[in-house]
Length: 363
Image 1: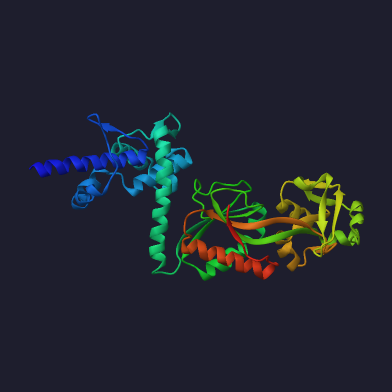
Image 2: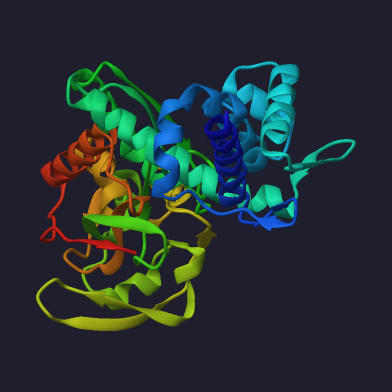
């Protein structure tokens, strides 16, 4: 009997210590500091694993519901993303709080927000769920062909002009993988938005992500045949001053831009736009409509060039565009469905554009 009493005390201590580790605090019971798990607890934990599991009654689904509420800000939004009812998600939150003995969420009339303890728990729970998901997918990937759901985000212009053909050919090769494609010029947080892969232009400055180089693009001058029928194509850079120019807002103005010919020569010129736009997708549409000569990335102009709807002018002069990189969360092995998609994007882009030697980095 003495041994049994001793075991019960150890088991309870272990349970309370688990809560302390998750909530990043050190509770006391009867004036005695609760200690973390050590090897001396292992036999008791192994022998009474069922009892211990029942003590921590929060399931993985409860953890996912909690993380979804924190990510999305409301129970309603979390329920929609999880395809559950609001009542089900609310019960999961209550059950998790009861299991941990702590209030994780502050309830407000129209929203909920994490408490200090809830926020600390969220950071660790989110990372733990990510590791569990990765481990589970690795186990499945070892036995099956890539399958599952994939969430991708790209810039609007690149997503509209380039991604449709890439996704179509990918789905033909991997019909078991379904895709959400999110067009956004905002740099969405991958973890908060449950995004598997982001295709972004620019320098690898974002922390917490692994960045794999896809290509480096150049931004040249293009015009529609209808425009060139009215206004002969310029032969020299200086002749651009006599044309209607369509430029992105960030690159217009008197400061000038640096152009290169791909053979080491550079020249800085100032361009006065007839039309300024905020994105390359709009610049492309205006150029196709014959509104002027547009300065557009080769990736965005490629399909129109192939169709004969655009003509390159003043080649090979162009300015350097940002490098396209595939970003994923750092510190995690890529699931097969994400890995094969990234490889497919690299292969498809290599067919159309000159690719710089591959490199990757943890940004």
